[in-house]
Image (cartoon, rainbow, N blue to C red):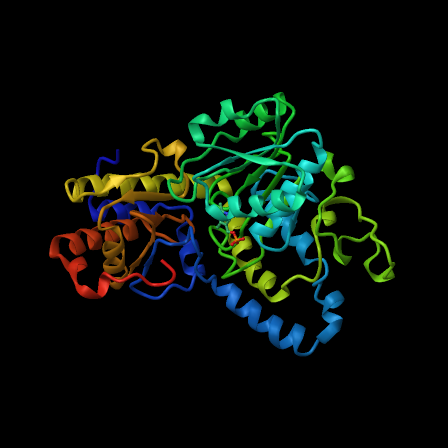
Length: 414
Ligand SMILES: *Cc1c(COP(=O)(O)O)cnc(C)c1O
């Protein structure tokens, strides 16, 4: 519990914040308080210049020579190494490529192939549903009788029995921000002979992740959330080095071929993490993502997590102090250590409340049926922003602004 909830104290915390200088590296409109960075991170200033240069010089002037001269061909590996350092992996164990969903397909397929005598895949039913859809699609296509065993966080350990081939879990829950115990669940999986695929979408960039220290087998994640890579920036995939030699994923293509420019008729896998690639990557999106990755690297995961926890504690304390009886119910763990980079509240009028709050310049998001999410990214938010955000929310509630007709209708993307 923060003892001092005044705005002056928040301003004092900003003055002493070791990450405070990073705020100026982001291009956020004056007056906007951006609390949706857990959905789409804001624009790093350096990304705008890097993309402009890549378009005009590398593409416009360099043309096809830029695959070599501008290092385009190696970009998935270079970006992968930078991501590896943030998620507790070694260089050569991560590539940046494709989307999270596609990488999940490849990794769960590869993991099931490494455990051919078993048919059960354990997943968390309340996870971001695309993960379920992807694995449901995969098992349909495998046609070998694989089944998904859904369990919720408190049931997972028991669900991981000796019939399980693969445990495919998301480290930080997209709605509640609850963090699963990667070390314990991975140990449990290995004890019964199962392999793990960890989804780091809501963890990478928000907190230190210890893939190798936890002995994780495979992982995937996205870069447009806490890594601020830009809309639709490619995801990443991790495979522990011990699995590389036997790694076989279904979307093999020329970029995972041993000699892509030999144009051989038949596939032969390259060594190492390149096996997870398929084909030509969205280079402009990768260039855009480089700036955000550099900022996350400069901040460091430990410092990012420390500030993220402090922002979260301040937010929860201010909500309790300013809006104690307004119908908000904390939908995230109260224990800061078990909570990721955002804080979620349930409220019966969550949708119009969030829409009205956005009209006041505080951008969070809403997840049906009743959850308001407040992303508290440590890279570009000040403590004073947290204070102002809760202040504006209190005003939206107390003035009744949220009851206005324009806030009642749902848009396509919430
Ligand atoms: C953000 C997120 C995704 C996004 O997947 P895309 O393939 O990029 O659309 C998937 N899973 C989880 C858990 C996420 O948080």
